[in-house]
Length: 435
Image 1 (cartoon, rainbow, N blue to C red):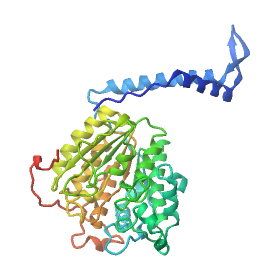
Image 2 (image 1 turned 180 degrees about the horizontal axis):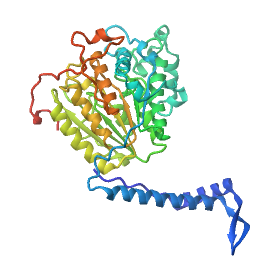
Image 3 (image 1 turned 90 degrees about the horizontal axis):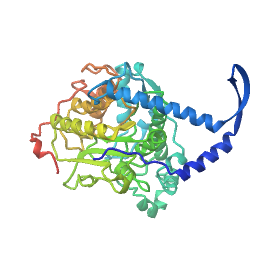
């Protein structure tokens, strides 16, 4: 891993840009004091702008040095007095049905939200309904023809497009269902809105539990994912940040996000996931490290079945600490797939909710703009528990173990408790690494 060195702009390009700005800004008349007399003089708008930017850079450099030398240990950063949290939710996502026997149940999002409400966490956050992302926004990453096809395909017409369904990988894993495109617009809109709010410094942390669909590719659906909201959110953050760190704790490799940024050093992707035994998606070997400018900016931590809280958090903290220290990101995107919990229908890890949440707590301590999303998770009552606890973690609020009365209380019977124990697979530290 190497420390990031931003590239210098070429003088010729900078000169052309200066000339263009000079033409746009022109000159202005300003009043100044000369030998005790106030007089008008001509001043270049560009010159004034450059001087202001120079002063701003000096201030930022001085502030950065002050921050650097203010403490001997740079990681984790000093906590803010109180974080401002933005939370995105649209109840319509919970009404989507992937079909009988499909493991993806968007209903888990309604269950999560009602737990958040029952614990009064909404009173400590700003709650927003996300806009429905426009096709042109989705096409910032995805191909226009793929977006257009998602827009027009319906369950009633899909039999007419067998070639296109195969081309875009729509079928058993990624079925065509009612309101498919609107579903994509909502969850992607939430992540885009969250990134924009962070960019505008209107919040410190933004949460979109409906997002985190990390498998979708530029021109096709994959692994229950149609639109890759994470890539769209990162692209939005890159408009204001030089470098963005993406962290993925889903049991499946974050292949769609890694692939999107595999050739750039402006995004570092770090994925902790199950690898081997033909486990989906089959990528994420430790040897996959990026290419060209992105060489060594993709980090994969391939794991075997049964990793528990102690081993997972030990790995997570040591790796993420070094990554943040070396890469110095301007913002972090954290995908909190809950299929890494013990007892998940499709997962094979041995994490408790507290172990999973400890990763969220650790990332929060870096005191960087943070975008948090959901992801996988197929035992829906445990997904809701996990994301409610992690909402509390982001709010520095410890939640009582007894679940308060809410619309979905029956799903948490018979214990009606928030935390579940981890599983019972026993393994040593050396047995859980796929190196």
